[in-house]
Image (cartoon, rainbow, N blue to C red):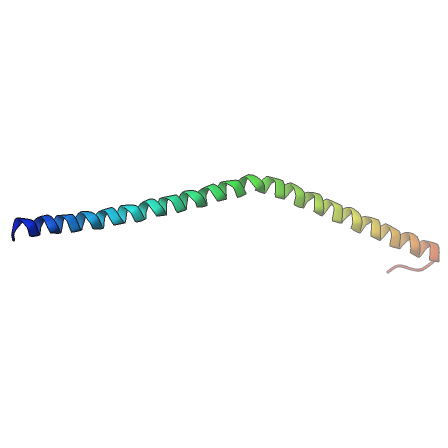
Length: 82
């Protein structure tokens, strides 16, 4: 094999390796971006949990208030509750 063919084959091989490295760099950037977004979401989770707990407590309070109003209305109207 002439030396120019060997050099050409080596250059082709190096170009292929360089292309793969470029693809790996793009993958690394994408993964880093995803990790960053996941970290931001993980930081927001405690706030969401707190807000959900507040909503649940508010619903429980509302349910209790509605039940009390029903009982008061029934007593006032002298209706038997099952």
